[in-house]
Each structure stands twice: as structure tokens, then as C-alpha cells.
Image (cartoon, rainbow, N blue to C red):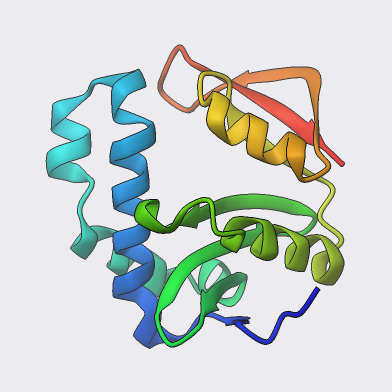
Length: 151
């Protein structure tokens, strides 16, 4: 697969990465957690940008899909996918699959954690070679489970 559109994130990408992350969190996770205070006050582009720029490891381990506009990103930690998000209106165009394939081939990705109730994400990862394991853990500060998926 061609990776010419995937590159390491740059400081100038912080705003776009934050937008993509925030929109995805609201779209995919708000219906599960229904926490207005968090999703519409604490979770904002400015705060997400600051977190991204201040975390050197996160910044160094994030890659963007950029064809002139940043349309998605993936963050890795060792052999784990930490985050994978694509602009919601651009989903279904193989951007996420290309980012995931890049991470698997370039970083030997072996596993990730997905929110058990995020069935769309689980199906996406299954289509891209991951399988659900029996291993679960609570999402931090919640009663919702994350499930471990492996290649």
C-alpha cells in the first residue's frame, strides 16, 4: 500500500488533529456516556491542542493522512494503537484503513483497546485484521468496558 500521503504530525497539525478528535469523541462517545459537562465544556479544541503539543511522546508518535488537508490521524505507543480518527464526513474512504495499515507495517502494531459499545469501530478493526479477545478493562473513570483486540 502507498504511504506517500501519511507523514509524522507537525506542530502546525495540532488544531486539525484536535478538531478531528473532538468531533469523533462527540459523535461516537457522547451517545454512550451522555456527559454534557465533559463533552461540551471540558472537551474542546483548544485544550486538546495544548495537550497534544505539550506531550512530546504523543506528538512524536502521531501520524497524519494529508493529501493537502489533514483528514485523519493515528497515534501509536510501542505496538499499540492509542488513537485512530478520521474526519467524520470523510469516513468510508479507506483513510482509516490506510493509517492502520501504515502503523501495522511501520510500527509492528499488535493490539489496541476499543470501547465495547463502539460497534462500528470494532467492525472496522475486524475488517482490517484484528480479532476481539476475552480481555476487558474499564474505561478510566467509567463503568464502560474496553475490549482488547489483537492482530
